[in-house]
Amino acid sequence: MNHGVLHKVQDFFHFHKIDGSKTLVACSGGIDSMVLLHLMRLLGYKPHVAHVNFKLRGKDSEGDAEFVKTYCKKNEIECHYTEVNTEEYAQEHKLSTQMAARELRYDFFDKIIAEQKLDYIATAHHADDSLETILLNLGRGTGLLGMGGIRNVTSKVLRPLHACTKEQILDYATATKIAWREDVSNSKETYQRNALRIKVVPELKKVFPSFDSSFAKSLQYLDEDRKLLEHLIQKELQAMVIPVEDNEKMSIQKLQSHPSKWAILRHWLQPFGSFDVQAIMQSLDGQSGLLFEHAGFRLLKDRDFLILQKIKHNTIQALIEEDDTFINEPLRLAMERKPKITFEPPEGTSVAALDFSLLEFPLTLRKWRPGDRFYPLGMKHSKKLSDYFIDKKYSRFDKEETWLLCSGENIVWIINDRIDDRFKITNKTKTIYFVSLL
Image (tube, rainbow, N blue to C red; front, side, top):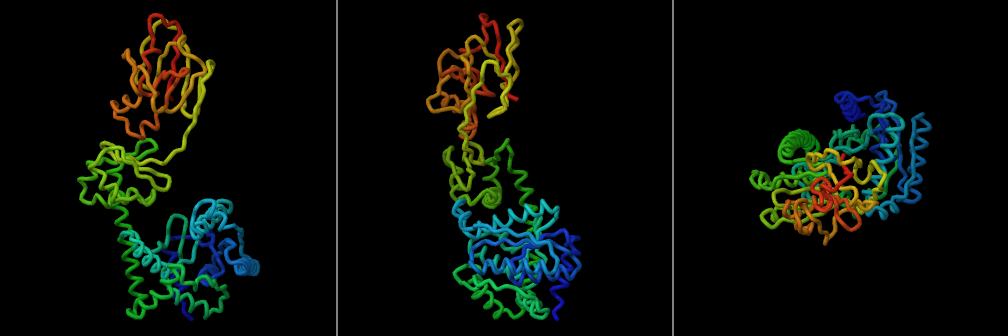
């Protein structure tokens, strides 16, 4: 019997100092997950099991579910089961079937982990899966970080079979007479991963007879190099990226002077979607105001910075009644009336002092609109808000984030910036209306 698989799984748990009994095993009923579950029990662990019926293969899906549930009942294993309509979810969320299944699977796993107070999810990915992932990433055009295959530990996810080949798993399952279910979809070459597994990988192993052992060594080196590279990238990004409230920005001048500017920009934006890095780089010497959008995020090429922001769909307006003293949405504002006895202008721009008698209630809190005009404090002529923003060097994002306090159709205060001259405190003022941004 081949005990190598058992020893590798044992070494995995010992090296990472993980209690396999605090683990949820993702079990499809296929050979890989059944071998993993068998090995963990053989090592004395009592893991929980999770099975998701994706309803994608008709009677075969039902057969897989019954197989796993029967195995768990026979062996007194805690089994967590759910059924999901994967195709409906994919259409509703505009995802591929594979991505929809992945989201549904991990949502269920996370739920069970929280409810059962477990620490980890264990999946049955192995060395051949890593090889296929590397080949897929190579074909898709990823960088060095895509060449490390599937990691053996990521956050709450464990892959104890990471160092085992498919052949070793098959040999072990056959020798120990482990039962499993065959997934006929694994033989369909229409899927890229299957085509690589069926056509490409066997040819590699023909050309390199000791491929499995040499690849295992390469995978270890790649994983170590990836960790170092990620560490260095994070240090560079920490020095380059400036967090600003719910945005991030990067100096265009610093980026252009960096010896690895393409890599810096790509790694900064990578977690936020597949931005067109080439187009962004070409825009750096051009006019400001260019906008790049992808997957719920947008990047603004401003005068001196690239500004990254999550796209917001905010059309909220709010009313402030005469007796209101506080509002919490969409901004936190406090309102207070005081008699004008000894008035001292407030310091800073976060407080507006207004003549109460000139205000028309309810006041309106809204975003700016094209054509808006106001009389900046100290000026006797009106000014377009768009021109005022240009003078103050507001970015496009700054303008979108700006709120206005209005009395009727008149702007009273550009919040946290400047009040309108028509509503200022004068010798005729008897009551002062203070509005404070909290």
